[in-house]
Image (tube, rainbow, N blue to C red; front, side):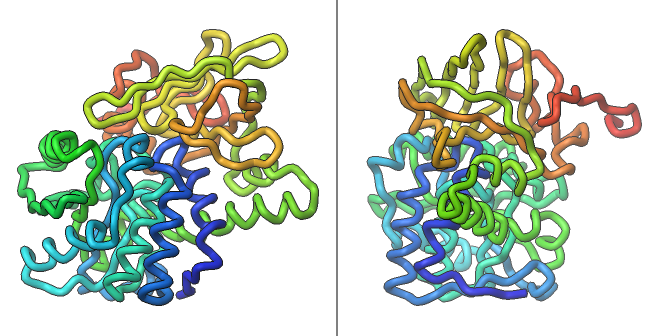
Length: 364
């Protein structure tokens, strides 16, 4: 069923996207400003379900690539957001019919809203991850053989390029170098799909979930109930820890925000390791949860999501974990987004404490 994104929906939708961003995906406030500007200038955006997308549609994803910490000080313009879509449409020699989110986290849920508004195109209620991940190839369409290239990219200076590569990992490697040279933050568009491919490869109803989470936090505050418990219930997850942030180490390297944070409770401490997004949660040296399941930091009282670049000494927070899309738990998916890919020598730990084991036929 289709629905309409108006300016008054943006704050709640952006808040929900920041929750699903697992600490990454960029500052939700910046994404909300960009989306609101586009809606004010170009009108509301129609959101369509995957079932409503014609089989022969031309779907393109739109996203920000780079370190979220950089985007806070290097704001994109609407021209920068739409330039890759226009360039890719020209390269493909065909009109783009639908915009989709590559990931549902942070600004990469609201930037596609801005693109859809400025281009006058419908936006699909779905995304390529069901959360946020730091690298371009880390989307479910990769598992379905959908190519990232040709990939178009643009920066605030007006530079625009179209990249053709042999596979999605090479798209990430080459585009990341260009991203670093262009100031560690660029707009990208790629992963062309038909409607039939989008229905198979994307996570359905992602934007609706963002809206539900954001509105759930607001309604819990108004009712003076626990907004964190509301998020846990909506995601089917669990609360891991509560305490005060006592240390944050963070640096922008090779186009990513990398680091760790330490949160101390009454008699124990939780450590979070992140690369844009939170990857590992460890309690007193014992692994609790790892990527690809979701690790989310929320303000202790308000339930407001806190990004990795927003973590500060002295904040009182609560950390929750939630399940990712089940397709992320096959062997090929874990090889792409599991802890081993990021250099951690340990198996995937699910949100509920189970250690992931793969049967032989799954790993074949």
